[in-house]
Image (cartoon, rainbow, N blue to C red; front, side, top):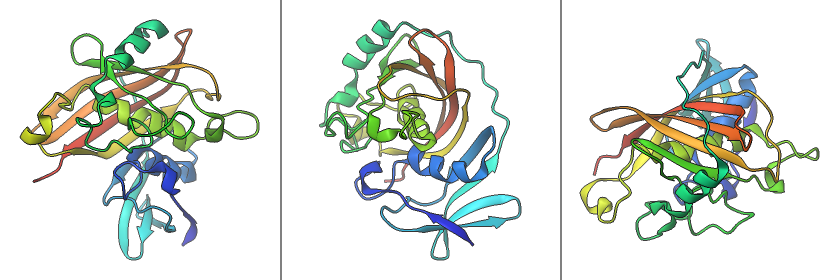
Length: 241
């Protein structure tokens, strides 16, 4: 086995498990490839070593004998919407249902949870932007970056994760009574340029498809000037009641 990865308690999604994007990004860093796809097999545990092993050309993260994450290189090609203005993304964020803790299924999520303070949580709240599209803003805190100010890849994965739920999940009042919560099942990411702490990045996510309890979305991050810096494809699965 290779050295382990470990998800700090700060980077939770649901209260007792790791944020899917952040967890996936930690394992993807091990591959050191232009684009990777990570499948979540179990809720990633917090503050516990996950040992890394190669199995039939797949890199897995293990909790004991249990496979938690599987990663492999991928070719990620998507039709990406045009970038939008930062002000439009801020307006969408301000109108987001994710800001309502009574609606949000996981209000302490490090990325999109309204109960997390600025500087601790990412405070990315995807809001509607036309049909089947959502937008928000990522302003990475210095705690997400190295000494040079470059944001850690796992934090970029996290910033691509939660906004992708916006165009495919029902966050309207009363949704929790109609449907079970959904969780990230798979995320593929390509980071095209480094992101830097303290700068504003526009997040855009769009619906790709739906099949029963499975819903897929594209997700992208742009500079405030409209340059693409990262792109992802996410698969969400509605939990069984």
